[in-house]
Image 1 (cartoon, rainbow over the protein chains, first blue to last red):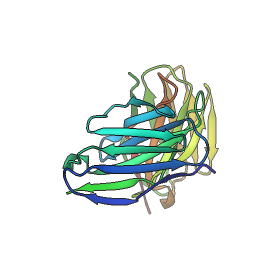
Image 2: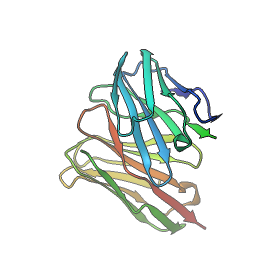
Image 3: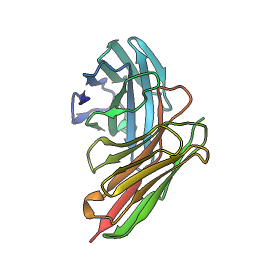
Image 4: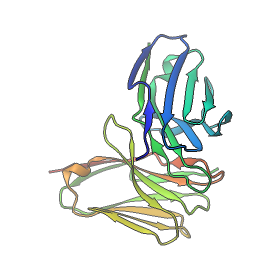
Length: 113
Length: 111
């Protein structure tokens, strides 16, 4: 079974802090994704990566950056956390190429106070 | 830009009844996925539909894909309370890496 693991289930951070959300997958997938989920807005893509050190902006990249130094790990960074970044963050991976089925981690509920 | 629309967004139904959730998308694609999400949990893959006319069934749920109409349906037969969850469809389009999700359908099955 594919396993996608996010480092924290719940996080509480202060406004202005730099926040790191970590995600690790164990199936040698090429692609990794970060989404945020908010009520009424569904899942919105923040960033994705299709190879080590490669990244592309999704639909809502402002205020975020990402890092992928190793194939199995994809980090989301909130440079200076703000209250409007309070949300559920979901990491996903997919095999690559024509194989687009995404497998999700358990989610991180981030609260910025 | 690929757009994915689900309807209805909210569905309250009685146990034993049948209903269908619809997923329309705006550009050509032959890869469509259905996911389930329980409250406070992450997304779990339900169905993978990879060609026109594909039909998959699991228990009381059946999904189908019509790529010509750009439409997928998720049919619920004789609903039970355990099916209460949010259901998302997602479509692969444009660059192949990405899935675009619908807003989800919150299904509540009442006794």
